[in-house]
Image (cartoon, rainbow, N blue to C red; front, top):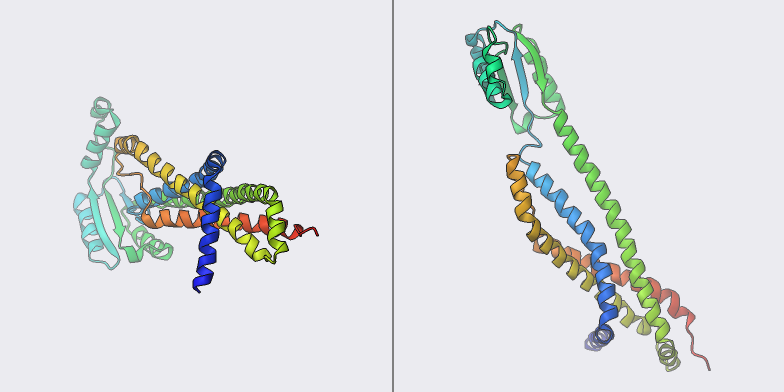
Length: 305
């Protein structure tokens, strides 16, 4: 076991030395890999941040009951009291016609025009919020049917359309993220594969001598695999740094913009687990690219007697 570990450590140090002896070429290759990994990492953080920010209300479903004009406030209060005692109802909020008119006057800017109306055109409203375990499609349909049986209820509105749109947008973003990650991951594999191919061609004579004295393909391939893994890991480390810098630079402006819309959205910084996953993905892609290239080209190099 110690001999096996020693051989792998020797191959790792040899690969690191080859990278260090060509700093400019290594830097450019690592930069290309980092750019390719930064985009999916940043998109993943954005989607996760939006999902986390919407998690408090994406599952909320409000059923709004608009009563017929002329329905007395006492009758609406009686309906609210009955609803509060039913199973599956978390909250019932009463918005009287006067409160609704005042809210509209403050939010619309048509205060003077509304003052010219002979009477209040708005109805009394009940906003019914089901409990979390009563928000399935069947439960909401049953609740809507019960509320529709009220003779003084005119419109029953279920606020689910915006939730469906939000979930559809998030699902689309996840699919775009997956496609982007696959394409850019393939690009990383191609870049590292080509870099290792050039390294193999430059060391052709050395490889021939190694095989001539009995070195196997696995022995010759090992340093190139570590070289690819180092390329990928260094590119992932630089990508992590770019993502962290981007989060730091955008945190202030995004927070200011979100507050202007009354939102608490914040840019989420990557966790240690996410950074570790990015490093592992980079090293894995580098190893794969090196393996593909080495397996293809080393088999063609045989010692010439």
